[in-house]
Image (cartoon, rainbow, N blue to C red; front, side):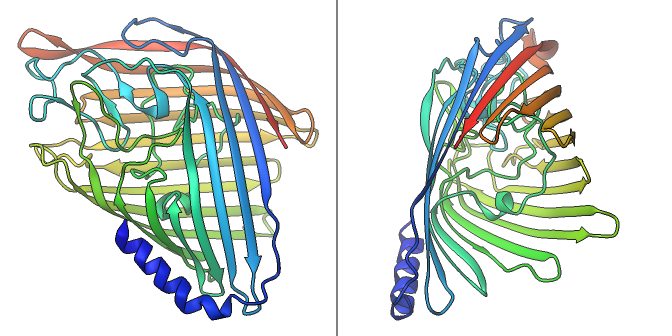
Amino acid sequence: MRQPMTLAAIALGVAGPAFAQAEDGAWKATVQVSLAGSFVEAEDPAVPAADGLMASALLRVSRSDTFDNGLTLGWIGAVRYDRDAPTRPAFAGALGLCPATSPGCPASGGLAPVAPATGLAIGGTTLDEEGFVAVETAAVTLGGPWGEGSLGLDSGAATLLDARAPTVLNRVSAYSPGLDSTGLSITRARNDVTGSSAKASYLSPRWLGLRVGLSYTPEANQRTADFDPDAGGPGLVGAELENVWEGAVSFARQFAEQNLRVRAAVTYTSADAGSGVSGFGGYEAWGGGLELEGEGWTGGARWLSSNNAWAAGNGDYEAWEMGFVRRTEDGWRFGLEAGWAEDRLLNLEGSSWLAGVAREITDNVSLGVAWTVAEADIPVPGGLSVGHRNASNDGLLVEFTVRN
């Protein structure tokens, strides 16, 4: 972290004389609170669903000042309170009952490995965590005709320039969920293994619809509400990723005659494994996404392929997300979402889907109802080999959101 901070100090010092006679900005604060009542039933006690009420509250504070030379200096801070499924805070957790000491179960140095792409494991102690607070953003940005640079706790280029499938609700989803009502979702096609860990990023201007981005993260260790890059616990071991590079190419264009907006992206991530535990090696992941938006509808898909930083064989993780949302002029949203993922490191495969409807009651209040299902083949030890049993959690949920 010392090197990026030093570079930022030099950059600000060189540009300092240009930061005169700024157009005074104003601090802006936005708040969004989502409450989700979960009525999802769990068929397998090894993978319990969320226990009733889930919640998410985000406070974001920002300010920007524009200077005579056209440069804009921005300050962004955000903190979130989340109460997710107790066994799956920040998407991480242990699924299944396959300890590293059992024959056939994945092991690294006598411990159960944590998949870097998701933060999931199939051994170790099952989590039971109530609500927690996480810093989502604490960064300074500098923008101009050459693009925008940022330094601090923030998402990386592969996330900022991503293209993704739409969701009908705000925080609950069938894929890459902010809140997982089933406690069983394994689909996460977001190409992001750093969360909001301290990083330096650059995003170019958009030329002819194209924009590129690059990020560097010295160490992936900052937990956010939706992902924990340093997930661990008793009996678990992670890759401890460091020197993480993220790159992305984004394309966006509005086709007026067809009344169609297209957005697409290709993302890439590479990192070193700092744990030194046998089995782990360099991390690499490719991602792609497509969004299509027409009059009253939005559709999209996203894909991720990662080697899970596993050098002791095939430990690849692959995930697909697809969604379609129909909007009406009077504020209704109807949506269908589906996701699928396979993790060969954890010997885990699963799918999930959600069908829902939401309504913008006012500009500041929305209400949604959905039926959701998640299934996974959970590995379990069986003598000298590993077997599987199918777990399925499904049920109704209600989400209520208020924003300023």
